[in-house]
Length: 537
Image (cartoon, rainbow, N blue to C red; front, side, top):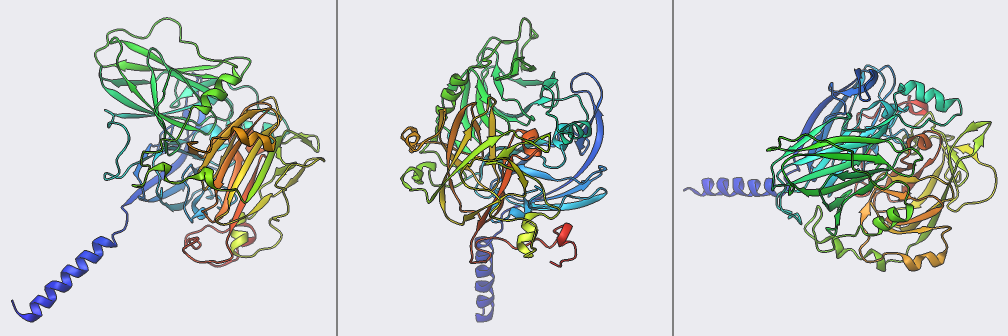
């Protein structure tokens, strides 16, 4: 071989090695079209929202760090957005899909989402964030699988099923929205659905183990989930591998997701899958069927009952959810290698929810502020330095006395701070709180009013991380959050009526050093609206 040929060969090898070392994560492309359609989830035909003709929407199966390119066409008669519940959108709140970060997609238009489930695994969901569209559908499962080289702490199941459970109203979403806009609360739900139906079936072989990813995509009700005659092994909660305890039923609060393994170890017949409301005076029940492939016996007899109002039982169950400290999550290092309990929080935020009347209409508030959307997304206003859209002095970090008021509430926070957040619920009903852009350690639950002495009961060793935490009636819940993700992030009630009528705000996580290592720039395809309409990207 000549010297020139040798040099050329070496050059080709070096380029090849460098290209492998710098290889991008895989890209996955999707085209979704959102339309109205007709379905009969509770027996009577009603208008629903379809994605690619499906209700619920398509199941989105991806792998950790995949680049998701999803072109969404809006064929509704109203502006529309999807949000990716639990996907952290690392350095990329531009893709969060809520009205504080994105202009909604106009009718007969489209927008391409570009995001990664960066360093994430687990079962999640997506759903509409606009105009009570969630009450009509448009939701679906989003599953993030581990990369092949990252071990999972259980044998690979024979198959996995995504079950979207939730309360449901027969009313049209526009009618429900008008009802709320008139100052009234929604009526009691009409039923409970499992994957948009009251009679779905899931088949498996006797002796094999199957994964069930269960997500509560309803508007308001906590649901208890159970499978007749079968125990469930909890293995993952919203991206955290858990200590693998066994349960005969699990409470799944609004906006939450859990993943269990179920072994078909009973006699070959059909069994009820049940989701029923919790903490309600009237119990609504939705059912599906677990079908053994060699079964000749359909389900029969009464639907197995579950817990109804036992608050202490549910709180005790919540405390048994614990982090598997030795398991890997999305990365090779064990989950327990981050010792969150040894870090002193830089700040404590206390959030108290309330249900005030403002100008004679029902509203919901946090720390006396009832949120109202601005005509310009907060993220765009921040980026273009547009005055008069929001103020970081509009909501306090601790409760205070006085009347509730309406504002576009934004709370400032410093990038890289480690903070404590306490959710104080002085009302008689369940609360469920979600934070976009993060997962957090759910370190404590307690009855009555939180005080500094309540910290003695915190779990500072193996509390799991999740994105949505429940707060029981006349009780408190506490979380730790590492603010490692710069951006404008929605903190909201997952109870959709409360979110719609003001129980939310935005956390502006800011770093004065502006660079791509902290946050990505504005996407070239960002939709501009409101006071940002005439600006240029």
